[in-house]
Amino acid sequence: MKYEWQDRYLIGWEDIDLQHHYFFNLVVKISEAGGETVDPEFIKDLFSELYAYVRFHFRSEENIMKHAGFPGLEAHHRHHEELVQELHEKERQLWLDYSDEKLEETVAYLMNWFIQHTTGEDRRIAEFLNAQQGIG
Image (tube, rainbow, N blue to C red):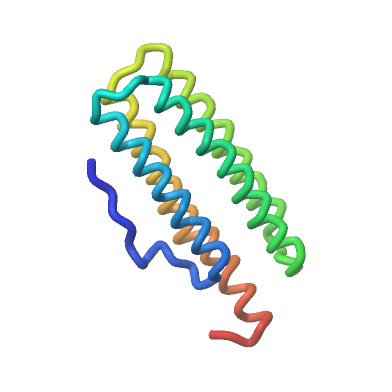
């Protein structure tokens, strides 16, 4: 499946939006690597990069929320932890019996999670931050 960035993924807070765009592009890279004749080690390396970036992004986002006194920080943190656990399990299943179809299922899961989380949970963060600054 071909994925393209859409402005509806923007939440209206520049730092978070830039990080979301990078995350999205990284998932697209993983998807595109699966359709090529690529060494599976390269795909594993992309997953390693994804995990590192997810940890960075989640910490960055949570620091923004903590600094602003966002009331939903604890629940949001739990959402982040759940994604990391689910992603580890999906990747483990992927490598048990690798196929392009299983890779695309994993990518579809990531994209669905990204879209739902960004347009729902993360948008509430931006609304809170903007309200604090008298924006919007």
